[in-house]
Image 1 (cartoon, each protein chain N blue to C red):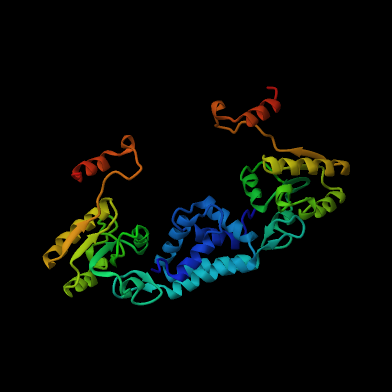
Image 2: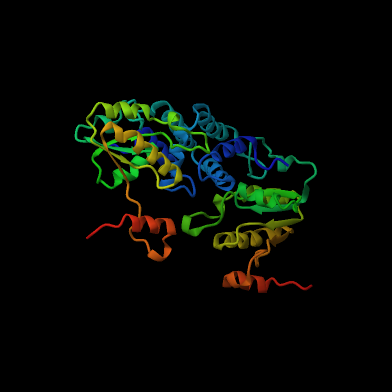
Length: 199
Length: 199
């Protein structure tokens, strides 16, 4: 018995490719779209195609953008001496939300991952070195994720960039604010001890 | 500072309308699509439009289908004497998965909900009465959800349909298989007691 009609099954298969979307969620989403107004569904489809057409990588920093160079790279008020390296474009958002960083960004478009066969050559590193050789950057903040791949990449970058005469720093790791000592895992706890600061 | 480019923000807004998709998930999905192959993203957009174009309601039972009447209504081996009433098309799926029901379906396209201003007139009830008056249906299984709206609708239907000379039954409510008595809520527990059966 044809349980799910082919056009619906096709959309479910497509949605299942999205992160965090399993079979049940994909099904729920597709059935919701079936109940939507036609215009609303077409707006969604249009938004997908439009985004893929209009968004590309910034030729300076690698950030995803609809203008090239991106708004971070052309913003007159942002400090050119400070460069924050992130893994992916979306990692910029949580940093911007702090309103504590006024420098510029560089997006690696990935991390070094021997398991996935990603080496430094596959990352946006060459343009980074070019940027640093121009001499305006004084400090590079490595803001890769606090996991194995992020740490490996951070270590690699520090060895690569220090000889260029820039200060290379890493985001602090430790107890999350609002957390509870009892729930901290051993690795985080040891990082918190290691990075302890004087009053 | 333009944190998220407009074409990306537009897709995020669109995804946020889907059930179970909040701001963070919508963002993650949009960023994932940015990294997808262009063909794959276009396949998703195409699947949305194609589904909205090709799927409509079955003129007999109200089920969502790409052929009219739907495959359930035209299937020669399904028992016409048994009719299962569900709220929405997607409720058919869990019933089909049991392989324990061989009858036909009728989709109400909603439930009676005074809070949302939905009365019996807004539901797919008139065609249901027409179907029953043809005289082939012997039993109607009301498979609306085991919640307030589903129960209200079931009660309404039982009063409406019994005078037509059909047997009207309701899905059993009780302890879920594999569950634990300690975790059963009082309402489920009282339904389980009320519906107890002899060995």
